[in-house]
Length: 244
Ligand SMILES: Nc1ncnc2c1ncn2[C@@H]1O[C@H](COP(=O)(O)OP(=O)(O)OP(=O)(O)O)[C@@H](O)[C@H]1O
Image 1 (cartoon, rainbow, N blue to C red):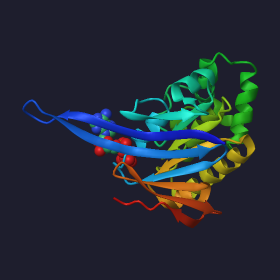
Image 2: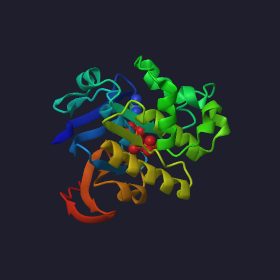
Image 3: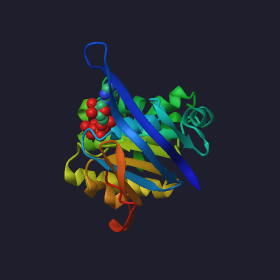
Image 4: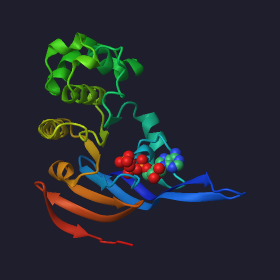
C-alpha cells in the first residue's frame, strides 16, 4: 500500500532581480515518488540540491508551488490533523533541536505533554530511554552534559514517544562520528522493525543510507535523477535513469 505519495511537486522562490524584475529560482521541479508502509526510503543529494526543502514540504511545514504530498490518500495537513503525533522528525542539529534549559526527562516528555498525554509519564520515559539504549541516570541531566550520540538518542526517544507511523530523518546522523553513526543506524533499524515505522532518511552520503534503506532516490538540482533498490545494503538495480 502507498503510504506517502509525492505528486509532481515543484517549488520556486522569487527574488528581486533588480529594476522591476523578479527572478524566479526553481528549487524543486516535478518531484514524484512514493513510500510504502514500513519502508525506509533514502533521499540523497549534494548540498543545495533541495533535500531540506523537500522534507519540509513532506512534513507540511512549507507549501509547494505546484503538486501535492499525500499520506494515506489525503493531504499532509489533513492527515496530521487526524493522526496527531503520528509523524515525527529528527534533525541533524541535535544541539539546537533541544531546549538547553530542559532536563532530558522534559525534552522527551515534550511531545507527549503537547498532546496532553501524560499518563504514566515517568514509566513511559524509562521505557523510551531503554529503547534508545540510554541509562536511566540521564533523566535529570541537561543537554550539555551528554555526548552528541547520546543527545541524538534523546532526540530519537522524543521522536518515537508518540509512537509515530512515519519519521523523517533529516541528516540525522551526519554530524556524528563514524562509529557513533553506525550505532545510531543500528538503533534506527531495530526500532523500525519493532515499531513498524516508515522512514524517510535524508542524507548527502550514500554510505549511511544504503545500509538502512530499501530504496534510494538521488536528487540533483531539484530533480530526481535516479532510483535504486537495495537488498541488504547493496544496490541491485537502477531504475529510470533520467539525467537531464
Ligand atoms: N526560503 C528560501 N528562499 C529562497 N531560496 C531558498 C529558500 N529555502 C531554500 N532556498 C534555496 O534552495 C536551495 C536548496 O536548499 P535546501 O536547503 O533544500 O538544500 P539541501 O539539499 O537541503 O542542502 P543542504 O544539505 O546544504 O541543507 C538552496 O540553493 C537554497 O539557497
